[in-house]
Structures are given as structure tokens and as C-alpha cells.
Image 1: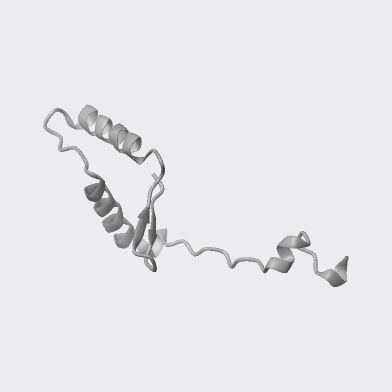
Image 2 (image 1 turned 180 degrees about the horizontal axis):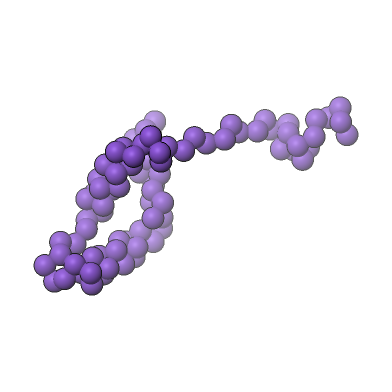
Length: 83
């Protein structure tokens, strides 16, 4: 499940069907962990993912690519002088 943490706006963006995905995760937890397996809550699931990501940030950290300038996008990547 892809979750976006916006530290500027202090928001968490989740997929439109995150409840269905969480239900599927809980179905697998029950199937493989037995009837005594504790179901995941949304906040608990996020907390586990965050802890894992921070523990492995040296190998799992991804840096986004620098955005292209608007002029480059409009001209298909070519500068006006190259046309």
C-alpha cells in the first residue's frame, strides 16, 4: 500500500481503497497467524512501516528526480533555440 506523508501540511494520503487493503492484510494475518493473531489497525500498520523504513533508511531511502523546467515540458524537452 502506498502512503504519502506530507511533513509540510502534516497530512497522510492513502489510496481510496485503503480500508479494503487493510482488510486483506488482516485476512492474511488471521490465515497465517491463526485465530489468536492480533489484527492490524491503520495507525499500527503505519507505525510498523515507519519503524521498518527508519531502521533501513540507509538502504531504502529514495531521492526523487529533480523536476524539469516548465519550458522543457512544453517543448518536448527541446530548447526554443534547438527547434
